[in-house]
Image (tube, rainbow, N blue to C red; front, side):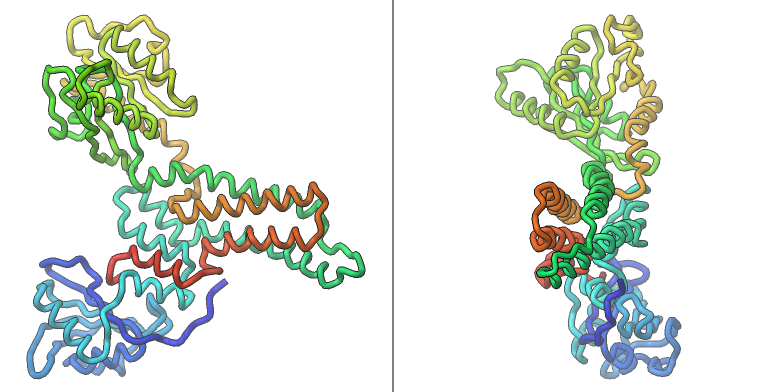
Length: 457
């Protein structure tokens, strides 16, 4: 449901493009009297008389000082990003020019915008809900095809629509139970308990996949962590360098060269991966190497995908022992390295050799790397195809709380509790759903969310 349009607030201004010297810089002004404010210094057409969504060439002059030749784009309320009167000034990208224009605007009544304040005003004026507002920030920082598509889907309301439908269904039953409370003395039942139970089960079936998607959704946003695990000198650092096509990790013939976790990102077919080179896992008395090995074990546990690298029967047995201690749901790939060397292209006597998730490569000679990338992509492709993926920790937490409240409704139905107690649990579920979309929102929540935005957005 669209929020009611509110009165325009005081004018704010900020640089909307990245700071630093560039060909063009865009300064955004929004709020009551924005057009009139910019028009005081704009020499060209009278901006107060032009139509909305029009661009005009002119100069900016302040106290007889010519600042720059600019383009002024006028947006009339409510057809602007903030739904307020707005002007965007496109000037040359000199830091000096930008400072002069902002100084001019502030001296005549505007104030510098806070981080995310333009988007916050758009939310408060009903331009979009809170999920969509947060998607604006995700879209700006998206650095892969999948993270871009996910943010764009949320910005266009894909996630919000699901939540609104859930909430509307629950509101219907909540209103019936509230009506029962008004007729408490007459012992009437407007909300059929069996129908309510079916609704709660349906809501669970919708919410649980969203909750389960968070782990993968967060990985999509930050980069899917892939840990390269193996014994010393099996070629872990060489593989990382080959995948990244740069000398990221030091490679020597000395066992135990890598003492700490090294990682970097790589985009494969639109998905961002964080490849993590780890210290070779072995028994050692070296204190520093032991610390690196412990970090390797943690990286293996936390990774979404593990590449078990080996180059001999012995190193294969060593990684097989490591694999036995992993979560059964953990995804992993067996990678036989150094197949370019004599006697290394043989098949080792192990169940691994018949596994579909086994790849033979030479990281040094860069043989089999394309096949390895294809197998890596195949491991995550099914999850990435999910229509709606939860990527925001705040959304995830409120979905968990919604699910817990719905469980209490089911427990109450099983116990045959009265409608007033059922109503409390339903209200709690509605509250947490509303907190996600911003239907129910506090000033502290808004301040926390929008403070993480860049200034000018």
